[in-house]
Length: 211
Image (cartoon, helix red, strand yellow):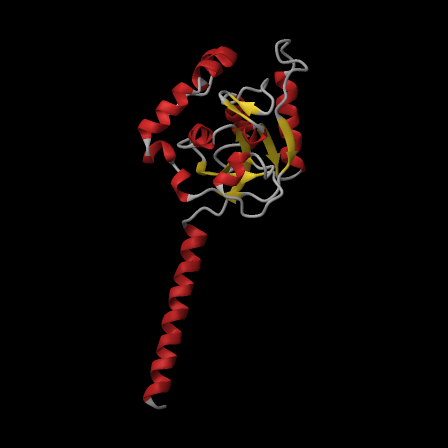
């Protein structure tokens, strides 16, 4: 065996060992249980914070979905011409939090009576919607709406859409965790938009709150 062959075999052995260790670590350590949910509730800066930090939620990502234009930009979506809604993709561990609990968080952070907008933001790009990924999510979403409509104040008045999920496009990086990157602007916008005041009016003490 020449030197080149010996180095090659040693390198292959090293690679094999690294791969074996990585597979073992994945099997024994990192949780593989992940699921996704997609919601639209007006400004995604605010909707994202409804899910951030909730036990069982791995990430909340601002983005766009429900439209016709591939890879839309913020400027395109905010103009209302692409059909997309500002939305949030929630990545979660279903062994720690259920989809039904995520639905509950969603409802208490939107105005289900407002069509084509949310709070001070008007236009279809700010609509409220639940984008279901499969039949189980669809049934859970419809059931959650039905439970709300058992109360007379909600009966026949909820305009939040429950529609099939389509491609989710992650928004530009500067929108992600905006409440952390630019807290002054975030809180100024949220307060000025009347979001929390309206949520409190609808949901009372159960209203979703701001970070």
